[in-house]
Image 1 (spheres, rainbow, N blue to C red):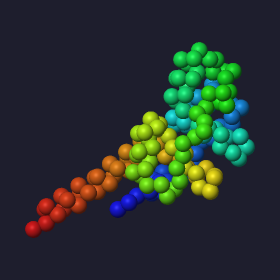
Image 2 (tube, rainbow, N blue to C red; image 1 turned 45 degrees about the vertical axis):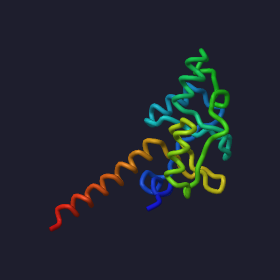
Image 3 (tube, rainbow, N blue to C red; image 1 turned 60 degrees about the horizontal axis):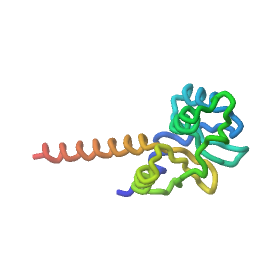
Length: 144
């Protein structure tokens, strides 16, 4: 049974934390910490212009010796973003996560932000499917 990004969004919801491109890295990391998330989608008004992740903090700010209080997201975000749509198959997402070495994938629908899935969301979905398959097989084996 093919499954899509929409299946994950229907469980986790479509809320996405965004941050303006003019926000400082310090403010963004505090926001990420408060929300217990690993990334924010960076916007300029209604337009998506990038994504800022924990990895960006390490590689583009800390390792580069930049001051998080004065560095803006626009200077260190990942852009352009890699994205998918609600109809993208989970297999395609798995390939994207692996080939691009990313963990956060914004979901765009008609050019608008419609959600965000993570490699962890994909793993949790697969675990649920495997558990269901195991339950069915156990019931089949136990049925006389």
